[in-house]
Image (cartoon, rainbow, N blue to C red; front, side):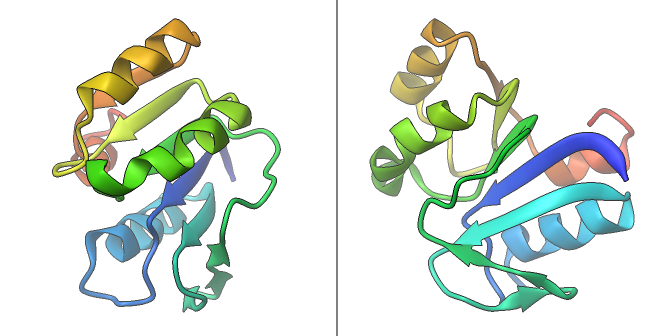
Amino acid sequence: MKSKKTLVLGASPNPVRFSNKAVRSLLRHQYDVVPVGLRQGTIEGKEIQVGTPPVEGVHTVSLYVGPSRQTAYFDYIISLKPARVIFNPGTVNPAFMARLEKEGIHPVNGCMLVMLNKGEF
């Protein structure tokens, strides 16, 4: 396993969803991944956790939750103390990005799938 434990927030058991593709890509690249979503299910044998489960040692949070639904997760994400939060396309939230910066967490406006494929993760 590579050392950047990544929590994918908004993970879906639906294989056509980008959050599902992200979890599968992280697993293929041998990252420790924690899928968290609204519905239970599995992705490549990894259980999707529901709610705001306690997770230790998170390096990266990759968001697949739109700005209108992110507010419920602000404190949760900050409590995880990740080094960075990746705002994937459709999730950019300038107010939350500013709050993360104040907390010492680096917000990244990008696409995790592209970052992985280019070796920039």
